[in-house]
Image (cartoon, rainbow, N blue to C red; front, side, top):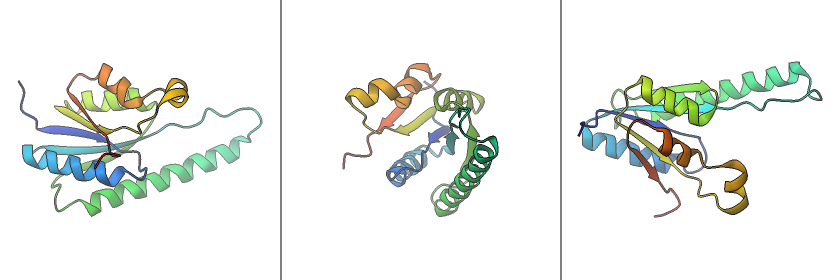
Length: 147
């Protein structure tokens, strides 16, 4: 069994992100592991009814906002998460998480779940479930809704 030295933590900046970051920082600290936080932005493919200039302006603003949030996450956690990194990626969430974890030679992926059920899960799928099935390393899925 390989020691856990590199942990990838996908964050979506939803209301439960703080709980996920707290847990990941604690666990990575227990292993003295380097933590890589990532956020994947998936743009809406658009349609012919939306002007291209509006779409480009929206995408640029969204990326700028997410980069600020990632910088703030790193700043807020720099004391307890020494050397952690953060990256914003544009692409398909599952593919991007898997590619990034593979490129970093991650030993563990820690991610949250939204707890979708029923029609929502059928229509949207579960990113966490798809990452779990495709990852080259263990995936720890945290349920941020449980205390």
